[in-house]
Length: 242
Image (cartoon, rainbow, N blue to C red):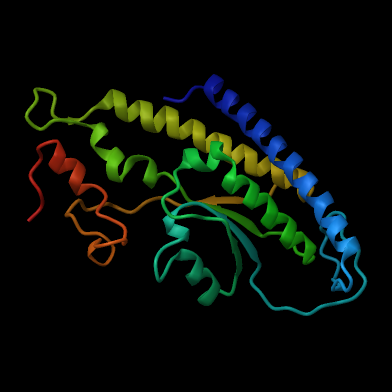
């Protein structure tokens, strides 16, 4: 089980990574400012007051939306043909900015820096339009344990300890994934506090009940994703579903 000490350390790492990201983004902002100063015909837009820090209202611009959401995550937000974010846009009227990338793990998001830098960039973009994000969407965890990684959670079916290996499951989920989640949540919160002036609600979704029958997306052939669980069961000697 995660401890207060490990969570506290993860939060410290999250704040540190956020500060590093913000430092890079401040440098990028200075570069952008110089580029605009040298631009022969920059486009100047007037925006309405929204309560966002450091925005100077000069005129009203009308736009209809249920709100702006910024998404960070994996294939739930970056799926072939259709995904959750398209539904939020088309069916519910939200404007969605996404830095999600299919196949990314929570550890990728927390420690690799790429998504965190892009997340900060999208916050800047939204603020330039005079809007404060309504919520942050975070999706992750499946790629950390599904696919090629899944088999390591299992003891072989022919062994005297067949089934899930409790020690490995605890280490991966309650320690590694928990720390990664605490880190990325703290990093996102720190970035929002610095750039917006206050934290923004972060929404995390749960995963469905997976059926390890070997099906992937549209059959999982060629470059399409899946299957995720059945190969791991097969590798460890468990019978496949009919």
